[in-house]
Length: 478
Image 1 (cartoon, rainbow, N blue to C red):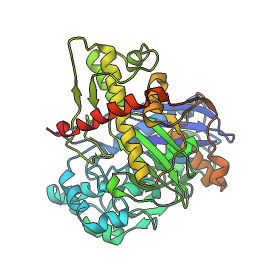
Image 2: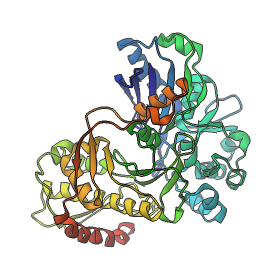
Image 3: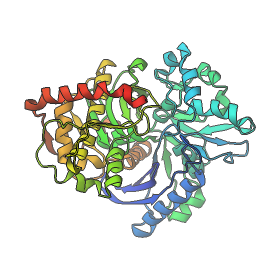
Image 4: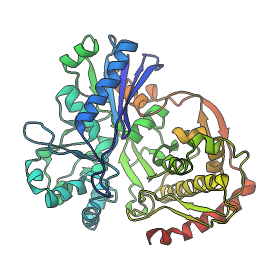
């Protein structure tokens, strides 16, 4: 058996699979985010350990973990966990959606060698600007920092005692030479860091360490257990979905939204605000466009209307042309294509007859137009996509998937019911680390339940709607 642990922002999910990659059971433990100041987002790493203990402990009680041979890790990216010389956490972890370091990010990004070496814009949520912010605003804490770990890699430190990261997650720090798959001395120096403060690097499908004996005993696991390098959350999702070769991609409708394209080449195009990162398997890269509010936008509307998100979308019926109400989904700023932490959400075109259905359609259309902007940016960056696999909670809405297929003008394929997320992908990486199996043997695509084709009769109407959507962007900064 193999165990995948996904450290998300809202919870830790532990998924157990067997040697045939059948999901045996999953357990989740919730997490909360602290926001002590505007634009701040933090968590205590001790809460991650407690949640992991809770989720894995529940698996041990409900199913038993005696035969586990490997553990894989996935997690929220870009977070900064700072440790002192004794390996103790110095301050709460600064998370991916924390934008306090926007000025520091802009300063780093202005140096030409940063984009050249990292292949990416320095976004405010990335790790490097967080440490520059610490050096300016918390100099005593910065001076004590001997190691910086990403969130899932702190879990690894607790599980194994090893300070190790892997290529996909390290790509989002602005410290990795993504083409060379190694830490970059010039990138580290630009933010006042050194290689000695970085963890070792492995590929996601390689062994990074072994589970500590006391934890194996606590969970009833016998024998030596390898811990794989693992992956950042989106790369782990791609492993779970079998998205590992050129031309394959997915659209993820989670809290954030992602259009993901696998590649056998490193294709940086930072001017597009597309992320060009290492994949979790050797000699493979990926590109992705990221919007910060996808299902989160629908959840916002549901909260305002005191409804459940699923109830808002279930009564929409057949796909209709674009409505007169426009919605910009920049509730938490935006990454691709704008790289604008100051952008705000916006509703426009309201009339006395605007009802719940019209607002719901506007939100779905606004998020979909933003995803189309991401697809355009990906294509400008050289990505090739033949179809998109639909993943995430929002993919349960047939209306939304038909809208996405039509606006993006790409077939959307829907997998049969099952768990193909980051925890499942992490478990697959554990299997590869333990057995030495090749990715093409393990990372199979799920069985497809249906294919949703674009409705070409609405192509022009939605193209016009997207033009109106794009014209509103300057107002969102007001």
